[in-house]
Length: 235
Image 1 (tube, rainbow, N blue to C red):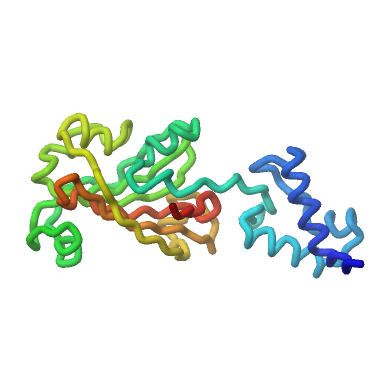
Image 2: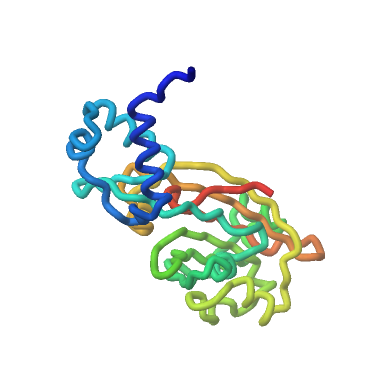
């Protein structure tokens, strides 16, 4: 006979099952830990372990001073390397929007010049945006593009539409390939404030270098996603 599951594992399964049945929806608040102890006749230590594992697995999250809440199902960090945030959200049935945090021309640093294969000091479009889905902050994206390939880009609407569509329709630039590197980090105060996260909070970070059919580098973008809403699937 198989050994009985530990009590904390049973509580985890009960909460997960309640979410699956729709009894608990994303954003719903869980009962206080004391209530869970009484309801399931479990010790505080047992309940705390179950809660801790559910938080680590991204099933629930805590808000200091407010309590525990059911997390939204994690989205994949964009549907592919050449699919922009706007297109990705549209595929999910969500309305994408942006808030421009910074937009200017800058000179290419040594690192950016090497990445984009341009001389040091080359004029680059620097664009930093807060990306939102249905009005909720999802990611912070920092983008660099050679200005010579998209002159006047900063004169266009960079909040209401897709950057990839703009590059294609106005400048005739179509991305053909890309390389992406992913990592994880903890949010600092600024990122947490922009993304509406309580510290400590995990972030998923991707750095993508995109190329045209000619092989010329067109874009370097660093995306910082909410760790409670995104997971990375490698294809």
